[in-house]
Amino acid sequence: MDRMRKTVGLFRPLRFDHLDLTAKLLVKYSIPDTFEILDDVLAKEFKGKEGRRKIINNLTRVWSGGKKEPSTFQKEVLAKYNVSDKNDKIIYQYLMTSLAFPFFSETTTFVGKYLKMSDTFKSSVILSEMRNSYGSAESVYKGVNAVLNGLKSWEILSEGNSKNHYVFKDNLLEISNEFQLNLLVLVVIQNHVGDSLTIEQINNHASMFPFRYLIRKEDIVSSQFEVIEDRIDTYISILS
Image 1 (tube, rainbow, N blue to C red):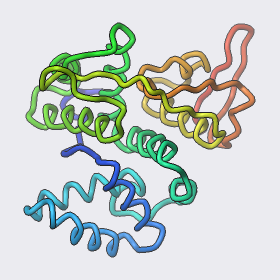
Image 2: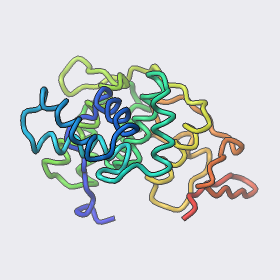
Image 3: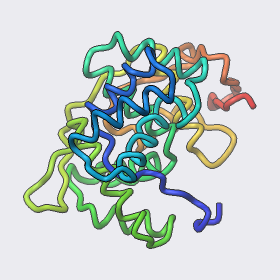
């Protein structure tokens, strides 16, 4: 993909409390009403109307694709999300953000790769990797900061000794729920450049570093997938 056409899309950290409120509103209200309520709530904290509009666009994009009413699939996610405990809510927020923002998924893939070598990293290293892919616009700097601070809001990362230093808390969130496992598979394949991935590649994907999970062939139950086996591997692709 031409790097100049790749969009960042993320402007501010997606906070747990804001995403949680948005998910609650979307099961009760229409998109226009959800926007209006969020605007009233966020006005207490964010004075600029344009800034608030961008934040609300980001929040609704996670759960409903932006200004569209949630799809059948998104409604199913929202229904499960709204009866979940906090850990499961963080899992859903992370996976749906990864699905909504390829930039988020790519950034967290680099974070995961660096965390395989050490449990700390500097934000400048991640920024440098993302600039190779997206160019050096100010939006890339803001986007990387938004991702890293979002991971702090979910208590996945904490700040290290210095301002640009991050530490992985290593309190892995367990994913054993079949629906979440299938959502994770969808996220990883959708953000992969190519048609399919092996189960082993999905089980070891760097972007999923916050989670403890193990996917087996029998866990793949979603009708969205095609499962192809050869003598060595099991491949999964998304049905077009």
